[in-house]
Length: 548
Image 1 (cartoon, rainbow, N blue to C red):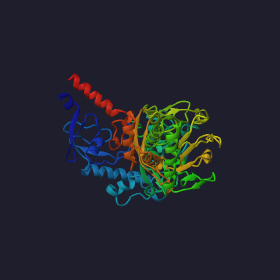
Image 2 (tube, one colour; image 1 turned 180 degrees about the vertical axis):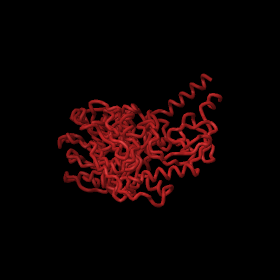
Image 3 (cartoon, rainbow, N blue to C red; image 1 turned 90 degrees about the horizontal axis):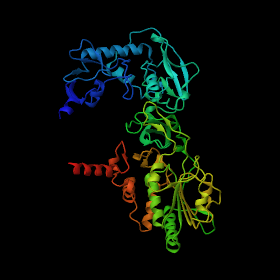
Image 4 (cartoon, one colour; image 1 turned 60 degrees about the vertical axis):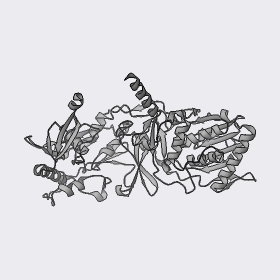
């Protein structure tokens, strides 16, 4: 108890008592108490230089106002964020900013995300006192995807500190002095040399650093934001997926201290166009009596597939092959594996592109662009799928198919390198996919499914952390999540009840696979949970009880 008491301090902020760990800064303690302190240069993932002076607060007993972003709380401290002295100081700071900074929201890409107008509305002067022309510093291309508008920069230096502290590469600096100060790169060396540079766009609080990719695409208030996961490598970075008109416009990191802190790599950030794929499998197709694929309703397709599977399972104990894409959710792959088991077992394989090496974030080594360039490799391996093929994610399937498989089930793999007659010897070839595949023209059933951005589910990242994602856009009207299609087929084969939701499908997963045992879909929460975490915790508790 005594040790715990020494590690916390209790202070009072605007009359509210707050108990926080020792060493917490006033701005963070205030946030815990539900009190917002205006700020620009402070960022929870970076050091704080007290550059912007927006967070000045009054501390009783202190001779002058103190910046809340660098001052730590002490026991018995009394902080006043709304005192007359504090408000007067912030009003002065805002007037200083507006001396040069334009309130040009109609032409600024950060409008709706920059808080300058909110701060001025709350605490600024009603009218400016300057009649001089504002400074004009112009724009610059900093390299990579980053453009710089010097007229908007308030010299908070978040971008400079990020490159030094997190990216581990001092590619940005402040040049000139006074009101001529600007952010710049070193000579001809731009930000394209860094794998993490585009994070400076996210942390720029005023729209001085802009994404060339997103420039003038949409206004912030037109975007729908959906919590999701980056699927472009096995790291599983938490992201917000911003959409408009059913199109994904940009990806931005979402804070998760266990996975990616506040950051994500540029590789994952800019590979989102495939989410907006327009060339889709629109409706179920079934091979008809004339040997051609014809349109069918979902009922016709599923009933026909179930009957074919019953015949094959009963007469031949069909040798089956399941090929799953590591870009599909645990729920999708899990029920595919279950269907394979119900058919009597067989080979379950996947193919995944791999990079030559990992790109580790120097300032947060837990974060890296992983070698596996797909989201759910670890999840597939946990469910018994075996990797085949080369580092490009191609090959490896011919040996699995030739004369070996009577039933071939393909989930999401585009089969881009497969010959048109790839599955010609199989008694049944089922293709569940979002995009058409040339090799699927020989399929007996082509079933339209949603891709990950259009459905709810989970991925398992490289370390075995299971995390949830949510639908950000709508797929074709007749496309269904693969777990839903496979669940209905399994129910038709007498294997359980078809899941009605992604949560039900995950519960089925936890019943079928030991690695997922004990995990609850609802309790995964915002941070996710490690495979078998519950089992390990329970085992640890049991050992603790034995020791006690």
